[in-house]
Image 1 (cartoon, each protein chain N blue to C red):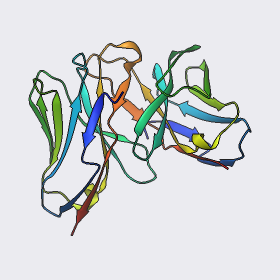
Image 2: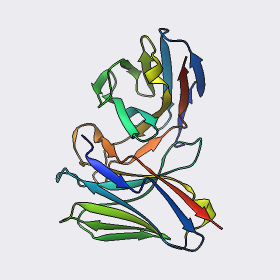
Image 3: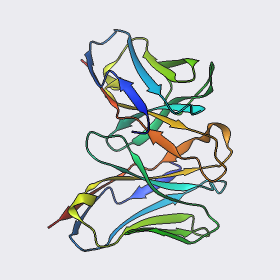
Length: 114
Length: 114
């Protein structure tokens, strides 16, 4: 059962444009939603994360928008750059839940073209 | 990679042979995890550990076993490797944190079973 659904699978954006990746979750007990960025040949790295008590969190060009009623959250990359080309994973977790486990989406491969 | 090393980084083995992958951390984090990453499936949890000698199964644990005899080391063993276990394996670490279940990933091990 896929508890976190991520779309699109791949995305091509022009330099300077906005990249938007969406995730939907099923378990209403989730209360921590991170995004990870992965470059080829590397391990995933934490990019930004949000708790459900806020609807938006911004760090530089990266913003998470969170809609608790719709059980959806999204990553927006403003002014996308070729260096942002990577695979992005959303995830969800229950803080204090057994093992600090994360449930991941299936990933979005982003390519930013010049 | 947050003080996490994985060894070997690449391995080719034959069907039916045993394989052990090692994860070593220098962060003294309580939790350690083994994931596999496959196209279209994202990151799937194999096993995790919540302390020395304390381990539990993830969503894709069949065919894998783990051991943790020291805080810093977490071993993943494929008792009899199969072609379906060809994948990239990532180790991750985490500490209990009331603000979020942040996990930090190692560089990965690419395993090919022929």
